[in-house]
Length: 99
Image (cartoon, rainbow, N blue to C red; front, side, top):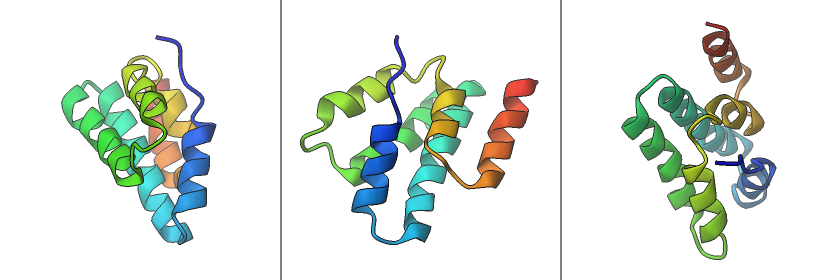
């Protein structure tokens, strides 16, 4: 499935989660979910991603969130990096992608 732009999700997090530290919790959680999904841990990876989306609320963006989840397969690395998590999470994802 064609990848979604994660810029919209990143902006939702940054606009709706007031504390920067908390924003990184959401971003890191989503990125780790993508990472685990890419590593073959599909169920837990999708669950982590879905938890972030549920916390943000589906109201007015249900279609977008569903499309993100449905397009996760094959786009995990791009999604992990596009959400802009902590640099340590980025390093983990980048190293796994090189292997």
